Length: 284
Image (tube, rainbow, N blue to C red; front, side):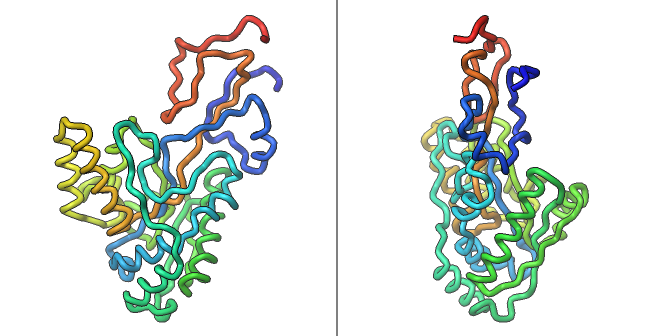
């Protein structure tokens, strides 16, 4: 407004409490962004070593509610799969829906009917303001959601950022807030995180079939055959085994006046080569 900046494209500068105002501004531009917010399980500790329990929690998670209530309507979309939409040469599989009755049945099959005898467990996240504050709000919503749907009691565990990442690496958690922004426009930048030997895995989940699918996919020169293998791997990740549960896809946003700035187009990676940006000589 003051003219001090021509363009703002810092993804951390979107005050959620002002979204209703920002969305109506002609200089506010939002678009699908190459990132996913999700939670991960520590699958090395019971009861989350049982895929039925993990799938029950996924089915009991109302992602539409989380997005509608907490993100401020800035363009974020509920996620049933892990790899964001719009990735080159890839169509993600559908993940698990929101289905409370199915969740309760699975939890009962795993030995916890109505949540009976289910141990207390924690949801670890780091504190602070902005995006970190949103993590806390998501934790509170999940706590109530799972209490109502599954009859289980979640404890919120807020720690400093440094401790948070150390706890993930050491598998010192039950469930953990997580997110990932892709490095390049390909499904592999998301899916290779959960290879058995990946340092980004941090769930304790190891699956030889998943490793094989990723390996075979990345040896393929036929893009369609490669996409089929990657899709099978993602289905294994988010439907069959569920060591992670995607919650929503990020939205990107830029602030700039199209009457003053040209050469800037929103895209999945939010990349804007400077040589194509121009400041118009006068307001049209």
